[in-house]
Length: 362
Image (cartoon, rainbow, N blue to C red; front, top):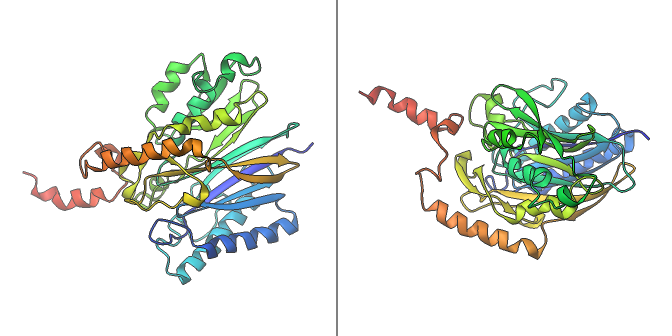
């Protein structure tokens, strides 16, 4: 059987209103263009969604990783949607598009990308996560819990097919170097790195056999642009069941609204709130940061779904917790720890203020 590739490519092409949501005309435009490509056979199937002001393209195809045709297709869609956004005078139209011309691959050009390629199993459940108002390091804690924490994933203890653990591919986003660490053998080394979630990011997770289990987008748009553009609003793909964490084990880390960086102007710590697609429209202080989860069964490349996995009352307590934490942390105003430390503010608008004050220091 030919391997199937799932490509999730996202970009902020214009906010409605401000940075809070996605205008339906942009989603309609993306669907129209993807329908054309599906009819031509470039892609097998697709789904378009949005988390906050980010347009998320979920596509299946048989062309493999980093395929130029797939990436060009996504780029053209983002450019076309940017034109729609400009006509509507939406906020920050095309802010994630850092170039006027496609360069063969969207990586390094602003959009975020997560891709996995695999042979379909007898049953292939996959969950696509998309976030708004946060950075790629937001996936570090849940991925660790899913694939390395037996208090979260009981399969690591009682399922023989998971007992040997997993391999984590960790990226140093500043040096652009990766290191592979095994769990449970290298667990403490792994935690040493990924606990610094603004520096080290989990890029991929594999079974010890080499089969891919999860992938995340690791693009840092501010590092690419050399200035503050916006938060990266990452996406993630996680395969489930049959030697991998069960669907419930994959969702369980989000039952606690843990802290992530981003929120207002990309400059604050805030609680990560798991929400339904219907509630993925952050407004309070441009937040709190949101995460959605769409579940699919993959059938010969067809996306059977989605199921809105966080549209579940069992996550109500996590949402209540997020609002309570937001109340508490917001009272700190411009003081740390609500505001990010200076080392993480280098690519925000703060350097402009410090430059103005430079000559006043004596």
